[in-house]
Length: 237
Image (tube, one colour):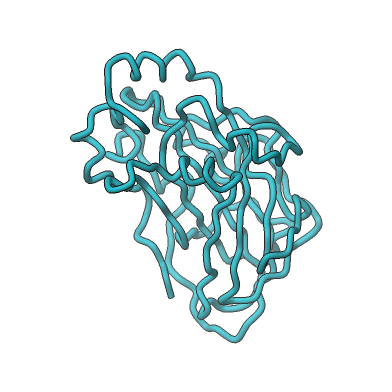
């Protein structure tokens, strides 16, 4: 975000219907898995209620058959774009002044090809707002062709997991219900010898519409100097 002027705030309101996007692809240790294990959203529209089951894996999405194999301790990259199949780095991953944090959760499940995401989720990656660089998490997506990479904790127990990649747009979040949630669930089979099964949170339930990182006027610098990323503490293993 480049300024906090009133004019910029008005511009954000004018562009509130632009910039809708979805996480579409996954990379595993540098290998492009495209969208083979993604429960692709039906549209690029956001979820706006934190109390609906849509906050788990997006509206109307259903499990798919394939799973992506990931090694515990390995590197995973999720990739966001505005339009289906458009991976051009010339286009912003999420435009329209859609500033906000990016987060990644995981949930251990019995069968990632059937689970609906009603279990326990723990957070493995996040980026909110950095005062030094004046960058939001969504800015990083735009700077990196829609990509966000994270290391899977090496001591996680093997098995099936859902990976929930999320961007929260806060450009109209100064009123309750104004925040926009963009998430996609990916289905993976994790290999390794770890034993950890972290405690987590439920969706819905993890967020409240009044959380300070969700109900916020981001065009006032004092509000974001110590921005609080929603959800539980990060699990690093």
